[in-house]
Amino acid sequence: MSEESPARPLSQEESPVRPLSQWLQLMLAEIQAKREGEERAHAEEARRAAELAASTAADAAGGAAQT
Image (cartoon, rainbow, N blue to C red; front, side, top):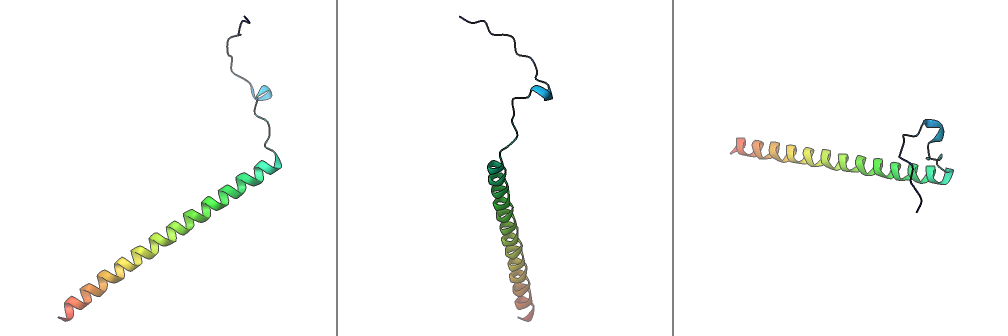
C-alpha cells in the first residue's frame, strides 16, 4: 500500500486549475447571455403583469365611482 502525504494548501503557482479553453469560455458566455435574456424576459413579464393589475384596479375603481 502506498502512504498518502497529508493534504496541504496549494499556492497560486501550483494550483491544479488550468485556464479555460477558448471553447469553454464561449460556452460559458453563451450560457450567461441566455440566462440574462431569460431574466430580462421574466422582469418584463412581471412589469407587464403589474401594469395590467394596476390598470384593472383603476378601471374597477373608476367604474365603481360612476355607479
